[in-house]
Length: 381
Ligand SMILES: *Cc1c(COP(=O)(O)O)cnc(C)c1O
Image (cartoon, rainbow, N blue to C red; front, side, top):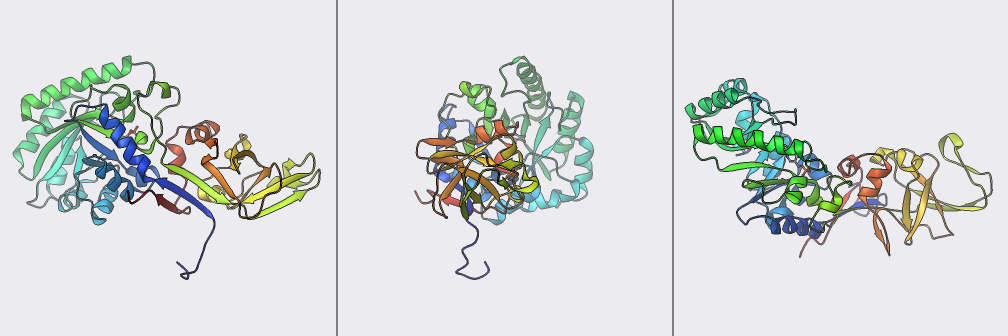
C-alpha cells in the first residue's frame, strides 16, 4: 500500500466464500459418507485465492487439498493449512525432500523417478506417494502393469517411501458420450486390483473430477477431486443439465465508471476508431482492460456488462487498462459496472463469458490476473 488512505482503482473481484462452502456441501450429499473430498485449488484456486478457498472448503467438509505444483502446496502449508495435500502434477526428483519436510503427498508414475529421488530423500518422515495411472488422458501416468509392479517393488523396499494412494484422471467425464469413460474405468479397475494384490490395502483410490463426481456419483472408490464445481461453475455447458445439484457461482467482477460523456453522431471511440456512434450516444469509460486479463474478444464478440441492472454493450477496442461501453442514458460517474455477476434481475455468468470467448468456464477466472484485487464476502459466518 502506497499510503494508508490510498483508494486505488475501482475494479475488483468479489469471492463469495459461502457459495464455495455450499458447493462442497452439495457434492457431499451425493456421496457415501465415507467418500473423502479433495478440494482442488491449483492455479491460486482457479483464480479465487488458494488459501481462502482451501480454508473454506475444509471448514465445509473437504479433508484433502489438491494442487498442481509443489510450490502451491508449500504456500498452503506456510499459510497454516494442515490438511493432507496432494500435488497432482509431476515434481522434480531433486525436490522430493521438500515434499518430505512439508509433509506433502506427491504423484509418481516412473520407476526411474523413484530411483533418482532416492538419492535426495532424508531418512524421515516417509514421503507419501500416490501412483498415477494413465488410462486414457494421455498426459502423465504409467501405462502398463509391469511399471506398476516395478514401482511398488521399489516403494516396498525403501522405508522412506509410503504408498498411500492410486489414481487416474478422466478425459471425457463432462461429455454425453460415455463409452470412453467406461473404458478408462475398466482399465483403472485392473490397475487397482493389481496394486492391491501386490501392495495390500491402499488408503486412497480416486478418479472422479467435478464432472464425474456430479454426474456419476456412487461410482467413485473413496475420494473425489472437486475443482471447477466447487467454484460454482459447470465443467461443460453442453452437459450442464445433467448436474443434479444447484451450484452457486463464487466469483463476480465489478468496476466503476470513471468517465461519462454524450457524443455526437459519427464520433469514433478507442484505438483504430473502429466504433462510430450512429446517433447521439452516452458513452462510459470502465477502468479494466486486457492488462487485467479482460480480453479484447469480450468486446469484439458482442459482449455486454451490467449498469443499473441493464445490459450495455462494450464498444470499440478494449485497451490495456480501460474500455468503453454504451449507456442507455446518462448515469453518474462512479456508477457500478458488473462484468460478471448479478445486478437487479440481470445476470452475466462466467458461462456466458466463456461462450462469448469460445472457451471453457475454467479459463475465465484463471485469466483474470492478480492486478485485480480479490475481496472476500460472507467470510465470518
Ligand atoms: C484439475 C484437476 C482436477 C479437478 O478437475 P475439475 O474438472 O476442475 O473438477 C482433478 N484431478 C486432476 C488430476 C486435476 O489436474
